[in-house]
Length: 143
Image (tube, rainbow, N blue to C red; front, side, top):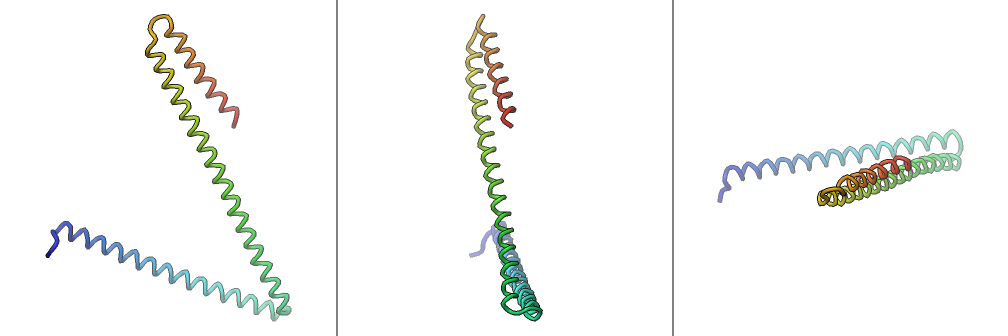
């Protein structure tokens, strides 16, 4: 049973994209393996050179210190990034709450003002404007 032309073309294109993505992933995996193997040989060469220059115990200690220092630097970078992301989420949450409260205040104020007729219209509008003004200037002082 043959598929209609549009569906057949669509399935062919989808299969081609999947095969291409699989090849790309295989190439990247091979690059990672080759890169890590090269890095391992560089580390081994550095150890052999240090062991020939000093003795194997001191070479091991130097290599361990280098790797521990690199790990500590990477850990500090990850911890700082985590704190920055946490702070950005906190600020985003505060901004969302401010927007929601402003919209609620505006909605309530507009409902009150729209129902007011006669002499109470201007005091209600002034109260709404005053509340908006106070919330805008209070949040600028917090920054």
